[in-house]
Length: 302
Picture 1 (cartoon, rainbow, N blue to C red):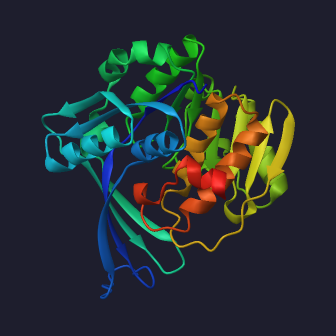
Picture 2: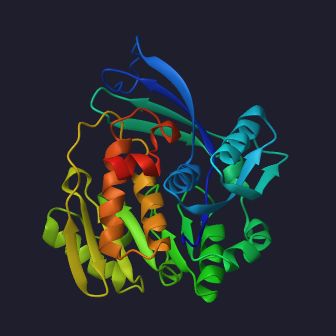
């Protein structure tokens, strides 16, 4: 039986244009294709976990507008508990503007809106649900003070607190000491460890620096090279699944949601990373954020 996962984070609507290449500064490119897709790293990870079989509660904030209402309706369809998604009366729902090139690379600008007002009171309202969970998953598209508070109370409750430190920024040791796991890409790892990633030796050195700050498990995602894992003094590199990438927008979010589902089902960390790699390999073959997230049956059939 899968234990409950609480995701705390952002809810956005992604407005996406696909182009042959990304424009240069000051340049206008004509001929792109446009579509809208529900997004936000918190929402993406919550939906990813739910589609993969997780029992998910989402703590977030939306605006009093059509984008927020549509997002809530979609989360219900996904089977996510939305009882802790509150509404801001003063801020609009978050929006992300995304450009994607023919090779799957993207450029993203975000207007946080209501996400920025997710506060300590919202976490307090979700305390009972957090107490009933096994895992709390967060990112960095909401207030850092709120994330620190949530990590502290969840750690005090004995929960596994997992942070995906995106977008990349320097993090205080007061947050890191309350984490069970960090799932970071190379850029995010450089910010946290304070060293440049140039090869696998520097990846291992960065993991050592982060673990010395109190984090039990470190996963550093390496794109097509897979993932590097440090778990209490043991090191592993787990290869990625080879596919033709179309859009990498939500691959990291899929990976994070999948890790949480696997751990909630009692899998080992190595098994969880292998499962997450399979899930992310499907995501990158599709356009969009939540529209690209796979279902459990697809993983079992792959």
